[in-house]
Image (cartoon, rainbow, N blue to C red; front, side, top):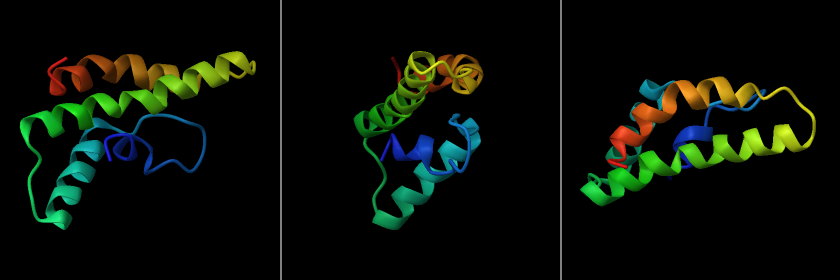
Length: 86
């Protein structure tokens, strides 16, 4: 679910959604399941959201593509890790 919060809007080149979109996704997920995340689940969800972007950057680099994921990754990483208390 944490990774899903970072990939749900993908329809074109790989990139992270805005932090607000991930926050809304995680809130809707908790509402739908009828239970809020524990502090640990919250941390894991925010940290896991960075994994798909890091994977996409690696793939783009290995295959000679311009790393479109990199800009969003570097501009959001600190805030996403702060929310993950990492």
